[in-house]
Image 1 (cartoon, helix red, strand yellow):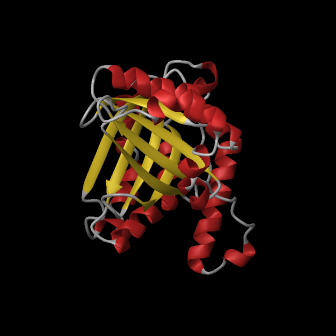
Image 2 (cartoon, helix red, strand yellow; image 1 turned 90 degrees about the horizontal axis):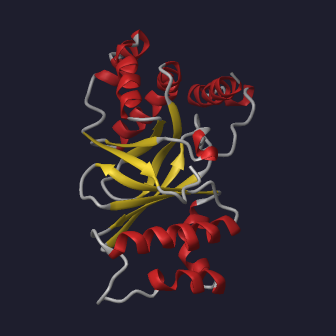
Length: 263
């Protein structure tokens, strides 16, 4: 219930800003930023080497820098497996952009990370790393791990990216989330982890969000509830959002947490 009240207050603030009445509302909570990394790997030694790096070196070092909780995931369903993902929350774009600069000066980190950090062309630790920077939506300003993260319980994650044909259509899709879509997710029983507007990355403009489920059966059942909700049908058919195609491509991945994941 507290989460719903918090969300309602955030959405009200965003709506007031759009209408020019923000002065009558309390200030919106400071929003986080996220670095989302994808490690493209080959089956074999790279898998263990990268997982050890994430769990033994990267996550502890980032936690020491005050960042977290940090997610580490295996790509189960999606294009170009195997791949691992890391989700790193931070207070600013600058803090996230400078992560590797700080790590390069951390002697303890470098000692533990050496097999990965100092790998050679003859035995690379990964094929390539892709990274993007995202800003949390005003209406969902903080990452919210599921309760099962704390107990290392059974859980999977769905990572969805929506690409839009123009900046204007992208802004309209973000607005759609703040115009009722958050509430429809919650009403359907989803557990959203984060919603992010991509600041730097590929296939721009786009947004990415993550949902958590116990298993794929729950994932499918919750989406059935979402699609059947009259509120969703009304919102998705609104002239404001349905007069043109505001999303032209959707990337839909299913991930499972690595043992070291804090999410």
